[in-house]
Image: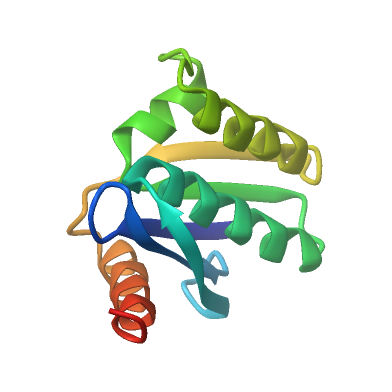
Length: 134
């Protein structure tokens, strides 16, 4: 099983945005991490983009089970079906997540606090990337 931690952020809403992720083993060893600039996005768009980038990276590792840890309550609830996705831009990103889910036998989405140490690390990577352009 892989534990995926992703975070996205925008400076301004919308504004310059970035995405970052960490992929860990069950024992907490980091297998892969990354970040990328996204262009001009909202915070919610950046959160989805971060998750999708993380799932693409996780799929390359060839594991069947993934637990995705997100600090975005909105994204997590949309992915678990508790909330509907009404925004057209988020609908497109949600659909991409649905496509990526097919890469795994089992996938779960868990909302975690912003203070989670792995989310804090992903957030640091987001801000490090944004500092390069702002």
